Image 1 (cartoon, protein in one colour):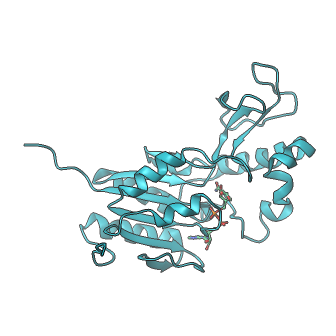
Image 2 (cartoon, protein in one colour; image 1 turned 90 degrees about the vertical axis):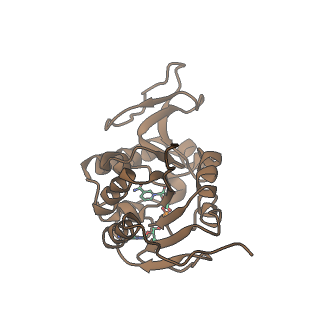
Image 3 (cartoon, rainbow, N blue to C red; image 1 turned 30 degrees about the vertical axis):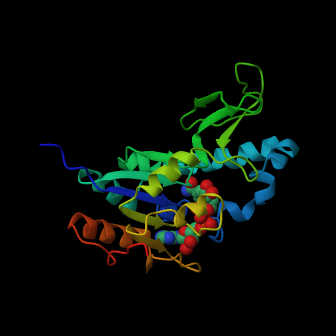
Length: 241
Ligand code: NAD
């Protein structure tokens, strides 16, 4: 007898899932993002103008992420792997999904723990929690930069992410304002039959076909996971017409 295929659960996560681990979102007040102007720290133009400031910003974020712990939402998603095939597509640059135990994590916007050459972008290296400093060079002699996708740069792994979303049986979108494209476009790609749910603290956009859960990720995500683990859906089945 052939093995029964596990239902695929795809999760699209954003900064909000890491907020309760102490990592600020774009919108939080008093956070790092308020102290620095996005155009100076998250664009190629900002890097060309002031690389010291850009490195200082990401060094601070890397230290902050290293000190943070995965929260109940990250951990609940890892638990789901026991019974489902789980693919996490994240806009986050922290590694909290991996540290919670999730094994299939696709990063769209890069990783804080990696550096790359500023001229040979394929030369990527793991730097752990270490700072990147002016004078740290790639093997071709060019300055290293964070392996982060800045505004105006090409998103990573997008075709792979689209493929997984199109195959989703269950689709959870969590902690994202769905305002940063093209990543936000993934929310529209899951099959009509998928059980879809959107979790965020404040929801302005309600994509079609989603159950809406306005609340904290650490409360909403474990409850959703329990529903799916019990073999139930959050919404009735939807069929294409
Ligand atoms: P965003 O800042 O635009 O939106 C955050 C969303 O999270 C909002 O919808 C908000 O309602 C929700 N939220 C806040 N706290 C929450 C909580 N406790 N529980 C549930 N939801 C909560 O974030 P975005 O859509 O991910 O886009 C921002 C970009 O910023 C991404 O490209 C990402 O790379 C980057 N970013 C990453 C991190 C990180 O890696 N931890 C942190 C900040 C920003």
